[in-house]
Image 1 (cartoon, helix red, strand yellow):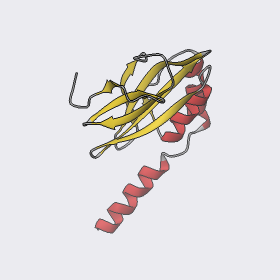
Image 2 (cartoon, helix red, strand yellow):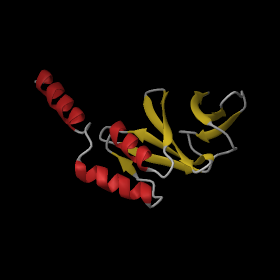
Image 3 (cartoon, one colour):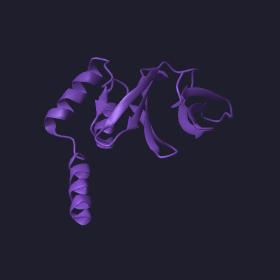
Image 4 (cartoon, one colour):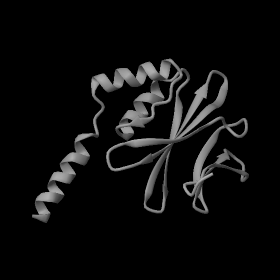
Length: 136
């Protein structure tokens, strides 16, 4: 019985890995219109969205405790980062947790620090808080 449950759960989890044509169209449309999706079905969906934004972007994967997060840095034309979206993985999809403007001008990365997600400018040691799972 438990083996059957594990197999069914694995099939359900891995069946949502590919981005359907319909979902890809919706993600590209949202990116062109400057909208940030409330959920993403997979990491591949996040990449599809990022690649469809006006000037591209970058995705950092973060682990805090047992939770997985992705941070999408949305680039602008001539501007390193115009917006930052933080998503947390739940059992079925990535859920939007936070959307913020960049804390400073520069090429940013996201890292875990003391149970929070912080941003760091490339070549710097200064950090800015981005997301705290414990609350505001």
